[in-house]
Length: 598
Image: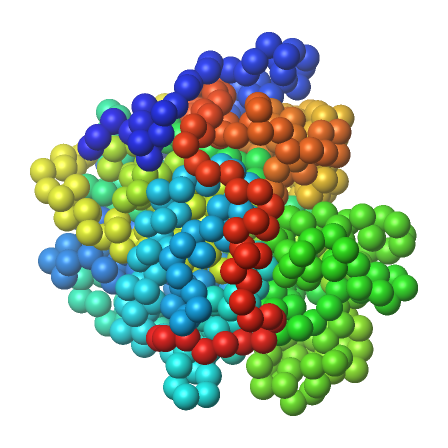
């Protein structure tokens, strides 16, 4: 495996141990992590004491990224596909809007590239972006070959919707349940794959390493707690995000950051974890997770209204309600504070009942269940934690900095999203990177040594913890101090609280719900300290004490790995387009859909 710790994505990199002197000092200095985050394994174990199985490849996660890897490897490669819950219970299933791709007649790879760079706020890897958007057409064709059916416009061309940050319609969809359609098609295909063993209801405890190489994964049966060692030449992480570290989120209950935390303990480099994207329009209710109201509804022409029932986005951004998510969310926060309300209003009444029922049947039904008639009522919406932009660093073929470990999808920091994900680029990322991983896995597996035994260090047995209270305290803390709007004082408070909770990492807990909380504490601690380090507002990261973007100091990435001080890597070559400059010039059609080539 090439040494990518010193040249990821062919960047010119400057590694600085720790942080500049002006940003150091004090008990909550960025990157001064609790000692408990230095622990290598969550459990004390000897793999000789329980069942072992051997595979060529172990894939952890069964969303679009994990399923695509399993389906794309050669048929002679033996794969274990491990999923925390049931095979179809994933973040992909919740994706409503669709998947972006420059397949329309008025679109191009260059326009998709430009929109992604604008939304990414200067810290995308331009070559990664170009690669991903250029491979979109092939990736979409492969999804269709697996049975995914996208909606068609008149004349039989694929129907394209417009979402936030896109300069023209570019999003392929299946009604307003695209994730369900993709999940169902890929799940059916993988169940028929003779070379794939499906292991459901097994929780990833840790990645196993032998020397400096990933040698497999330790998983637990969720019900019985029985351990199982899956030994492999290659492991692929496709575990999704961490929305459950927040009280208000659109993510399912399984999104507890397990893959990011396991990669951290295994010594993989992480990057950009301060960037957590909040979706502007979650139905304001007591539901957990919150019901997402797809951005495509605003793409169809719905408005956002303040407490006086007036539109507020047209004077804020040239794309109005279709501005990038960070711009919409920040303005919503200001309006909510000004009005003294926990929400703003989404107005789709002018679109008409027939159109809404036909185009958005899922949203129609969920609003109705909550007591709202989408064609007659204003619907209360508020931001909710939605997507982890940063994560495990990977190169263009999904390699992490740990030999034998690959990753794809939301668990990664691939260079595609920069500081703020462009709407519907996430499903595309999962497919493209997984296809690229599959192309190189066979070579990685050949000659890879299989560890026969892995033994952890010893750990103290569990003291009594009230897990539900710890989880609730963590979620409340992150929502209050490390949500959309952050400050040094609030983040310092959060660092103190999660530092106290980190004592739970010093003991061996055995139940899945306990291990989930340990992972949530790990990821939350990393988010808080990275947010303290970035003293500016950029994309999904908003500091009210540093409200402006600071390109002189912060065009780059905060990176760290277990055992090392955080360091900063400038981006030396990535284009930093001025806001809206590239996208607006080629805006083309307005909110209505247009047809495109399939």
